[in-house]
Length: 320
Image (cartoon, rainbow, N blue to C red; front, top):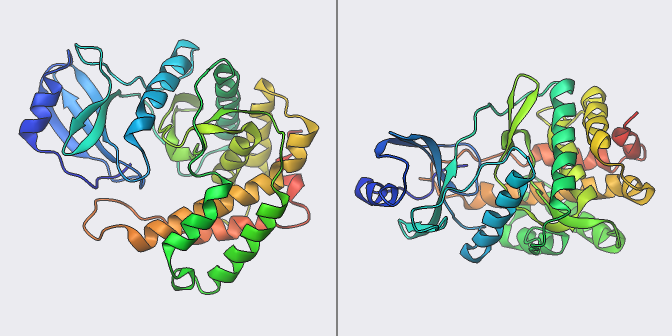
């Protein structure tokens, strides 16, 4: 979440008037994250999130996200509904951007999850994977492994971000291209289930949010993304084995990965680490100076990449 595009108060009032959610009381920008412009919208009818879709979310993909969240909600997953106006439309236009008003879910996002919270997150991911198996929609992964070389090129001088990064990225891209697996179980995945995209109350998951990278890809890749984001120290140098075990145990309570998927997890986690290293490096270089957004340091994902390259990396994914 972030704010790149401001909203005129009169335009906001006109937008809210299309809904049965009351009138505007306040609308405050949310600085976390990097992808879209997000606001905490309070009306006489309650709290909502107003999202304006920016650079990496295509307006043509929004019906897919609306349908996906509707499907997951109907399956009992704790996801935020996109509110429809009186005409039945969920997708709007404001400030020159496609926009949605989204249900507000209670809970907080974590910065230092406990093993018990990691287990709950793993279980929620597995339950989401079971629920989405019956979803008929598909979407190409615009941030899948075939796109990472383009992100690297678009970033520019990677060595200006981290000295020596260009050679590391070039070597890793070549290795991943040569070794990326085929034939693993595939369906729609979240692809970005970081702790700040999970809401919890105590040890209970109350919300899975920000599905805007959701796409059709390997379910084991989703597990790898979640492992990389939930189980490491803030600087990425150390994988907490208690958290890792709990995360994988929670997921295994819902879904048993195949032997082929388990064997591929270190490779997929290398890919996940490179993906977030590159997008963070790109945003570090290209985020506008006046944007209300917290840029994220790419170096912790370089450290994760190095850990997943180690010979014993498979041991990090034990569920028992």
